[in-house]
Every structure is written in structure tokens, then in C-alpha cells.
Length: 625
Figure 1 (tube, rainbow, N blue to C red):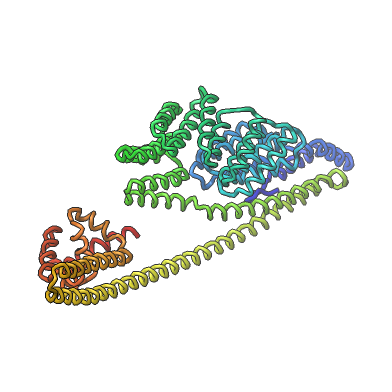
Figure 2 (figure 1 turned 180 degrees about the horizontal axis):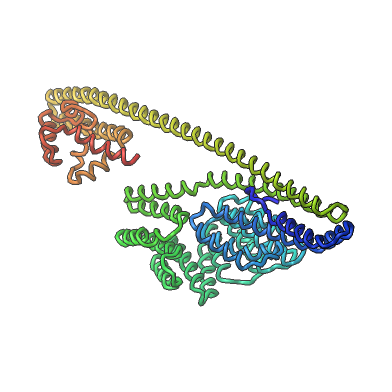
């Protein structure tokens, strides 16, 4: 018999060798060959069934331990899990049946759920469920099967495999309904409702919660979940009523009360009832359990931030976010950090702190890369494939072992020759399987490295292509802006000539009213032309340099709107003459404006204004990208 990773369960051959040695020692004093054979057969017939049974149970325990250790090998809490596994193994007797052994290991599934190691939970729960299913006959066996199927469904749901999670929940519910496990069935219904809520199927989620209410009665958690479903359906009054019922049912349970008040505070904030929302969040803070810096405290602080933002209290919101980043976030797991740092970035963006938001998003992306969904999916199905292959190997070896033991009872061969052949076969299979496994691992490693190399090359090519496309787009916009500037100059000359002709015409007009009307038309034409041209120039310019105004204001907040417009013209490389044509001013006036701008930004005469502006704007665009 072999474990999943090729480690032999050698206890059976060693025990057989010991039995054979004992038989030989017992028969040394017997001279008759027939009598010696009879004594050996009698000893083996008594000892072999016991040895085989104990060896099979010990092998199951060792195999499950090996699976667990492999599943937790790459998790953040590896040391904690290994200590718990050793504690369970020390407390387990060697003669436990599969269902009893599964019951002793079930706390590991709860630990996986609490720590967020859902991949390990799915793999272990699925393996134990299939193992217990082979020998399940008693009611307790089916009870442990329902619990493991429920744990596997939780893991699938949290990993995002909702269809697989639904199938496991359906299996668990069928077993629980058939054998009357009401407590387990209520847990399964709760988890199914969570699955439907995550997939936004609120009608099914509400139906599951109503079934749970008829099965287990009303509870604070049930009302809280119903409130979340009604909130998803935008039925806010009913959701508030459910939360009030949950508060009444949860009297004395601080943990549940805290969660209910958190949900109530967030819901009231969305409804615009800020004072009531603040009172609810304060109650949630008061009812927190004794442990500090938990996920519940993190959720309370985030809800306070959203409330302060909605109330327009920017300084309080910033203070709360600072406390969260300094005290609460560092105490959380990587999965929780990656999730809530993204929410903190969203809050910073609402407060117009884009640099801090960018930092939080980068940290979140780094954490999420290590917990990437696609990598988990590939790793999950890869490990499932390894598990299925190992399961087939174990089944084949178990059949072979049963066949060998049947031959011991049926045939009248000597026990020594049978044991010798068995040990030789097992050792041979061990060597062959070890060699094959090593080759398969090397081949898989080479394939994975080659795929990763190709992926990096494709990503690099895609990045280069995107960079070229952006450069081409910026060049195109720059050319359009230059063309537009030339058109502005042409239109300016045309309108200037028209205005001059109107001025000449007004001199020849004798009537005062007519002359005033002509002058008014000339003035209106100049103003409308200037406004339309300036707006058109600003539109094209913002497409080329969208960060220009923000970066310029950040560097020099004392500049006026006219100063910013002059900076834009200079940044695009327009001369003083071209600027005068666009702005309908004299060249000397533009030169004076340039000198005043140089003094405002404290720039020496030996430094180019355009070069200085390009250094500010281009650095800002690089950091934003």
C-alpha cells in the first residue's frame, strides 16, 4: 500500500516478517516436518487477521496525516497546523475506524475555515468524504460524511467555485435529510443561503432562510442573514425590521450583536440616517468581544469612515483610516489585507487622496497576486488530479492485499514462501513507483517552467505593444492640437480682418445708432471667437495632457486661470506671437505676462519656462502610470 506521494506503508510486511520469525522459533524444537507445518499454520491463522486489520488502520491514519501535512505545507499557518495535527495523532488510538478517525480530524476543517485556507479545506474534506463513503454503514458514519461535505461546500464557495459548492451542499443536505440530522441540516441551509447571496440569487437565498426558520426556529443570525438578503433586494424597511429582531434575539451574545449593529449602521448610512447609523456603530463597538484588532473591529472602523464621508467630516474620516492602517490591518491575514486594502483605497479616492489610494491598491495587488484566483484554480485541479491518481493506486493495492490474504486462507502453501514473495513484490513496486514518480515530477516541473517562461515573454510583448500604442495615440493627439493651433491662427486673422473692415465701415456711417450696432457686432464677434477658440484649445489640450492642471496647481497653487492658460500655451511650444494671435493681445503684452509668470513660479532667467513645465508634468504622468 502506498500513500499519495509514494511513501510506502511498510508496517504490514515488517509485521509479517516478525510473525514468520516467531513461527520459525516455535517450530525449532519440533522434529516432525508435518507437525512443524501445522504449528506454523495455526499461529498464522490466529495472528494474520489481527495484524492485517491493525496494519490497514495504521496505514489509513498515516496516509491522512501525510495528506494533511502536504495540504498545509504552503499555508501561512503551517507551524500551527502541524502542531494541531500532532496533537490529534497523539490523542487517537491506533485501532480507530475510518469514521472515528474522520471525526477526530474534523476540527482541522473548522481551523481551515477560520484561517481562510479554503483550498486545504476543500482537498482534505473531499478526500475524507470519499474514504468514509466506502465503509459507511452506521448513522454516525453518515453524520460525519454530511459534516465533511458541508465543509467542502464552504471551501468551494469561498474560492469562487459556486457550482461545485452547490453540488457538495446538495450531497450534504440529502444525507442530513435522509438520516434526520436537523442541526447539521440547519448549518447546510445557512451555507447554501450564503452561496446564493454571493451569486446575487436573492430569491433562492430567501427561500433557503425561510426553510431554515421552519426547521430550527428564529435566531439572531437568521434574522441578520435575512436582513442582508432584503438589502440586496433594495427592501430597506424590511431589512431594518429584521435587524431589530436580530438584536432582540441576540441579547447577551456580544459577537452576534456586534455583527448585527455593524450591518445596521451600514444600512442606515446608505439610507441617509446618519445619527441613527452613528448610534448603531457605537453600539457595535461597545459589544465587541475582548480581543482587539479583529475583523469585526476592522468592519466597524470602515463603516465609521463611510459615515464620516457621507456626513462631510473629512478630518474624522482620515483619522479613522489612519488608525485602521496603523493598528488593525497589520494584525490581519494576507487574504483579509488584500480584500480590505482595496476598500480603503476606494475611501481614499472618495476623499480625493489619490496618491494614498494608489499606494493601497498596489499593496492589495501584491497580496492578491500571492492568492491569485487563477493560480488557485490551477493548483486545485492539479492537486485533485494527483489525489485521484493516488486514490486509484491505493484502491488497486488494497484489492491486491485482500487477494493475497484470501489466498493465505485458501491455499495450503508454506507461509514463509508467501511472505517472501509478498515482501519482494512490495519492495519492487516501491522502487518502480518511486522512479516513475520522480520522473513525472521532473517532467511536470520542466513543463511548468516552460509555460511560465512563455507567459512572461507574452506579457512582455503585450506591454511593449501597449506602450507603442499609447505613444502613437499621444503623438496623434499632439499633431491634432498643433493643427488646431494653426487653424486658430488662421481663424484669428480672418476675424481680425472682418473686425477691421467693420471698424472702417462704422466710420463711414452717419447715423449714431447704426454705428453703435456695427461696433457692438464687432465686439461680440471678438468675444465669442476668443471664448470658442479657448474652449476648443482646452478640450484638445486636456486629451493630450489630462494631468496638466492638477499637477500645475499642486506645484504652484497661487497661479490664476489666465496664468494656467498661458502655461498650457508655453507647454505646447507656442511662441509669443502665436499666443498673441490666439488671445487677441499684443506681442509686448504676452512678453510681459511671461515675465510675470516667471516671477510667480520663482524661475531664473537662465531656465526655460517650457522645460520647467515639462519636468513637472512628465514626472507626474510617470508616477500616475
